[in-house]
Image 1: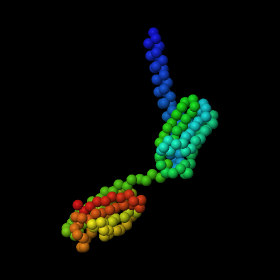
Image 2: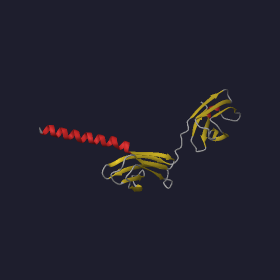
Image 3: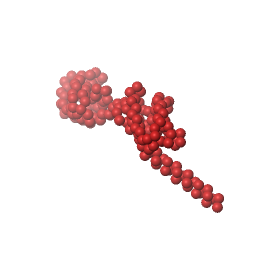
Image 4: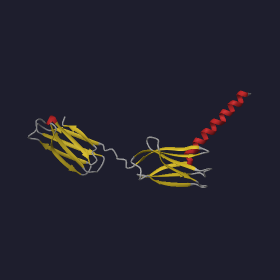
Length: 192
């Protein structure tokens, strides 16, 4: 009989824990609404005060807000005073514990630029170069011969193509080509 009662008690505790965690995801929503702005939505009537903490990557609390409300609420946080980086936003109530714990990047996330490059040697002194990228930003193409820059040109758009005729290089096999955007994200590739 004791075994049956202990089993039922364990089942009740596990069901209530599962129901609480399922409810937590529906009660609190944290959304990034701009580069340095976050909105916390509490979609149920809180039973007590709600604590919102923002922690840096070292888990130090950089901001704390205590909200007293007897209705649903949404609150926006302007994080422009914080340095760009990864932060954790935690929503907590004394009765229910941590309801939401979300990682957020504060600041402008730079999109990684992907480059497709192709170099074809057309002869002893002719090389065709084709560059395609996934962005339209201004880019710079440079050509190096034994570490010395022998050509530099900028272009706008996502495509660049040109046939180069080299007369004063040691060998087209030693040429190194570079393409990079204004932020310095780039790619090196050689003629081979």
